[in-house]
Length: 157
Image 1 (cartoon, one colour):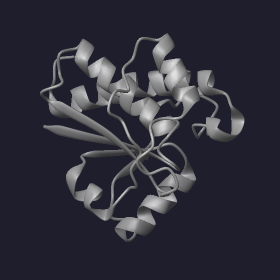
Image 2: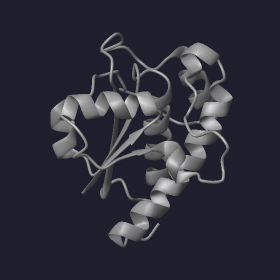
Image 3: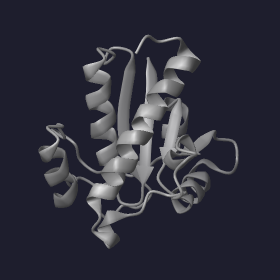
């Protein structure tokens, strides 16, 4: 089983959107028994809450389920459990490194998977309100991550 964790600040906008989109793509390819996806936030403000209304509305528009999703905080044990820890911005990377104790984790930013994009971080729609832009980046990033997983684990996607 391959384990993927998406991380943002509060785990109500970007990372749950990425979790839901990635799960949807995995189910479409019939790989739900090979890849597990979760999300977490570096902060604890929204623990237990569902995804942000803007995220839910957008996922509803695209017919993507977010059922049973609730915010949780990133923990050091996540480093041991997940093969891919994908952060939304530099601040998330720095905060995850603080929790796990330094540079030992192989972390990546979602935007590192999209070298042709001019943005180097996924903007936080909690502040910008631009959930459509985040969805576009998350959708493309999840496609690129699935290709990477396929390559690194010899999966048929």
